[in-house]
View (cartoon, one colour):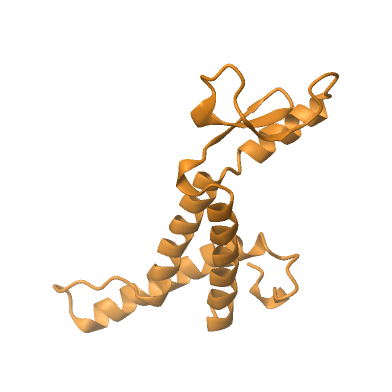
Length: 140
């Protein structure tokens, strides 16, 4: 894996984090109700404030499916995904070392860990293949 691939994925994570924080951060969980998306924290209210709403009357199954899709990408979930992916990237840039085994074993283990993480990161980056900075040689 190249440093450019790591930098590319870190930049996408930064973008996702910025957007999620601006949309409500960790305090905002969303739920789809019919064709609208509402803050899950206020579902007990008589009329919860909408995050976004589709047509309330005569909404189609497609509108309801879109609302469910939007709710699945609530800010808190996006921030958890960003944190998890950054944790994976750490294992590539700084593989774990053990104090017990000799250095040769540690180098071998780190190399194997990097290869596994490399494949995982390539798959994660492929989700951004439509980005203008994505390079085709990063495909898994």
